[in-house]
Length: 269
Image (tube, rainbow, N blue to C red; front, top):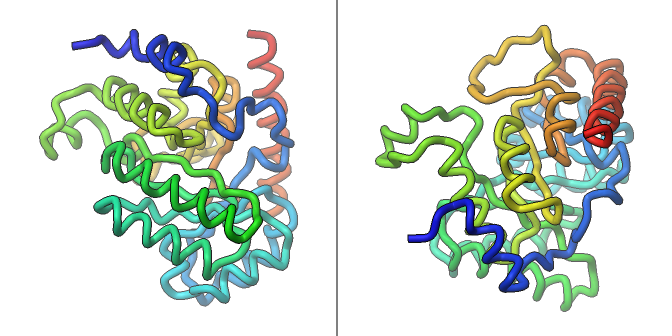
């Protein structure tokens, strides 16, 4: 059985690293920050009005249940990209149907995620449908990324569901599977980002949740980081919810300052 450390070389030799975003150097400062709209649907419009014009992405998950397509239209009006964070995990055909229905019914979805644990067949099916919809509608295909290990999980949690690997090994394995399936990148914590960059290079997206300012508590997250340390370590798009909900536009300004400092740290090596 091949070692995880050999997987990057297999990918390169097989010519698999040909995703649409070949380099993340083109991301603007704004595109590196996603606001997690983690509020009840009744409070969503207030937050969209406040944050929609100042962040690069608005991430929607549970709020979509109450807000529906109207919520997506409200975000679209701000000109901000939508990160559709429903983390689909199903059989390939059903996952493909999810993608088809979502992308046909909802305009402005710039990125969506699925679970890498669902396997390569599902990931390839979802990606293929996204490509077909983009061709038929003559629009830009949204980024398709896959969740590796949820940031709320630690090694005890993995063992509980029958996975006897370390968190790092599981993230490596699922990142390889994701990239080998042709997706644009992964959702992974800032703690794993440096390892992923070392093993697989820079030609894919790392979207990172669990981002907090230094003085804030971890709450229900296990693997968290500050905006500066996450960007410095190789993360590309940072998802912040509680910090921005609490601090508003001033917190966004602080996040951008930390992201800029992180980019400087990364460049210095």
